[in-house]
Length: 256
Length: 255
Image 1 (cartoon, rainbow over the protein chains, first blue to last red):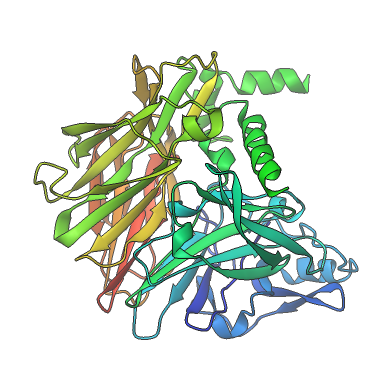
Image 2: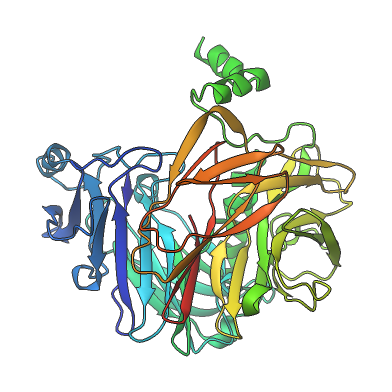
């Protein structure tokens, strides 16, 4: 199961275009868009019925995204089943978006009177049940020549809580913490990246929760939006998780 | 018993048969003869129409394996798979950047594919396969680069440079449909970039338009005024880079 999310920001508009079809199959109209949000320490699920773009797509704009709510595709029965399950935890209640290649929605940001940028996004359920640390190089997608670089750090966690965790900017060469920010679970966290941090040796590292790091650069109404890969994607041999774990231990030693 | 069935299912002859009949196909065949290797995507470079390409890549061996003397080779080909040049980069930071413009590519204004291979003489035992997924930024007429990450595995080479191969993405006997999961409504122009990720001649179609790509070849297709795009081919993983244009701005992402 995949979840989808938007970005709500003071200068950017966002829209999520969710296909009503799997990437090798005909359109299935009995799958609707549902919104999930935290209410009274429970996950509340509601059908969004005014988001049909065409026969083959749903579209959700900024006005329906508040950085805390998330979206998914499900049938009426699947949504009802989740609702009746007490909703104290996110569960994998629909397998429609479990496809190979991965089922994706398009997350686009734009500036009024300016440019636009997007990527094919999803938040897979397997990440929802995991805690851990996230590591990514800052200069992979940040741009020193941009007017502004923003990190949108999306976390979705199974429990309906906004638990705080730390986001560190770490210089691996000097083994020092340059800055610490605080993010929270079940939010699209927004963090402005300082230009001085955009160097090859600076990494972003979280201490308690994982997430999807999405980098946005803005210059003269041009925008770039893309996410970085998790480190284990760089290694295809059997030792990949061990090697990444060793590297994360190095970062843990620096932040502690 | 289950273990035995799994072992049989993973035999290369069985995988070939599974792919042929599209039964639980394996799209990516990982190389088995070169177990200390660097795998590369087929990365798009473009210097046509005022485009410049920025390539961002990591020093994987330095960052993950603490090897200080590794280097990378970046090999450029034209859209027809003609070799253009090879660049060796010895001094690596954890993150690195290469600007690809017509000056770098012998004055060529066009597009094609390049590959990045890591090189090292260090001993890594007998099982180390790395893949630099990398990020590509495209800028037009000096504007801000729009970034997209790597798209699909295409070639591999041993870390010592003494062998390699291609054709990691597999084919099937039956035609395979891939519907791009985005709407193309409202854009003034859309371009799709494909590289043949297989080791065989690749035939594919978009609507009524048919295309053929020899091994290593690439194509940029203008698909103006389509609301939706579906690709039909025998390739198990044929996913293009997409350029959408509107009101003097453009966006790039993988399909």
